[in-house]
Length: 431
Ligand code: NAD
Ligand code: UGA
Image 1 (cartoon, helix red, strand yellow):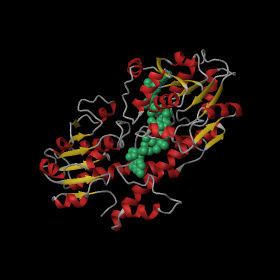
Image 2 (cartoon, helix red, strand yellow):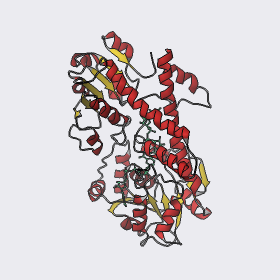
Image 3 (tube, protein in one colour):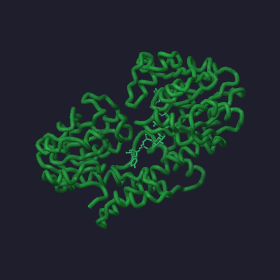
Image 4 (cartoon, helix red, strand yellow):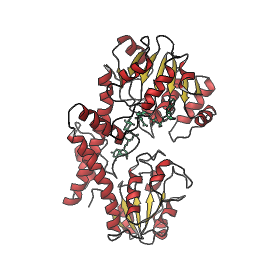
């Protein structure tokens, strides 16, 4: 078993640290946020991730998981230092490596000889070299080991990955990193750093492409009177296509797809290739936000000026409280700009939430339950696919609303049950 430092305790870092401890390694997780380190040291996990609190508690009580402030305190005795810090989008679309560089700078003086620094953050080609340059430690190898977990199922995905990707110029270092995952059954691809980094971007960009494709198909289905669900069924049974990531919706979002797709476009452009396909994937996604906002306006008779709209869902997808780059927030901001009065409910967003993502929608009123969002509303927009909405009491919804109209951007609700109660209903890609 190995000694691992994890720098950054967000979705990826905390999951990585807790899961490595669960696999038997000794892990010290570091963050710059002292209050967060305090809470984590008491076993308090403030993100919504199934089993994460359980694994953190297990790690703390076994002594295999500790939390400290600052990377240096974690890295001084480690064999591996995993960098799990943010790589946000710069104004020009490129990935901003300043957090990676800062973390590398911090751990450089204390890393033991022969330690391996591992990039788990999503970083563009060349970042392994950037870290090497910042470290100035010829005795330390830098390896790429991108992460493919999804929010909302982070622990499950980490422990049951479709594959493990390791990029290294040094075979011995690659073998040492792969040995950390010995208790996990998954195909392991060992390649060079540039290829490992490219695999990560290619996977995210391809998944985003699938969603933009199906959202475009949904528009075609509406135009020709076809049902996109049956189209996906019919396509998906072709094993070359599959059913996954073909759910039409309000557009893709979250903390990664938007920045990673743009970073790949930027990388290609900076090397002289115009990635026109991906630019269209982004454009289709922007159109999708607008298409949903227009559906809501259309349901209200064309104008939203002074119209009360109820919204179900603010998170970028169900089972997470993450509002970063959420399509729901984007759509709410478009409804507000059209003069609507918007009241929204999300099971993971408290009414007094101070989430910075809400700063984009200053007029929004966050309410405490699904029915409060419907109170006096002339249209209800379903923007996130929480199960709670699927199984809601529709009679109570009918009672609460001023006019029974639903725009269901996730095709979540039972439209027959709604029609029976006198609602008008519009989904995505279904006539
Ligand atoms: P996050 O914003 O949830 O967490 C990052 C953490 O790093 C924060 O707690 C922050 O305080 C901390 N931090 C910043 N600088 C630090 C430093 N110098 N030392 C110690 N801690 C520091 O980020 P995330 O969602 O976990 O993403 C991290 C990286 O992983 C990104 O590159 C992202 O693209 C990639 N990734 C994310 C996911 C996901 O589902 N969120 C999945 C795969 C890959
Ligand atoms: C995504 C990838 O799925 C992970 O493999 C990757 O590790 C991660 O990005 C990352 O690099 O951060 P995540 O952002 O958690 O994971 O969310 P997804 O489940 O991929 O959903 C992304 C967006 O696409 C959401 O807005 C979701 O609602 C939307 N989506 C997804 C659809 O509209 N339709 C679908 O069929 C699937």
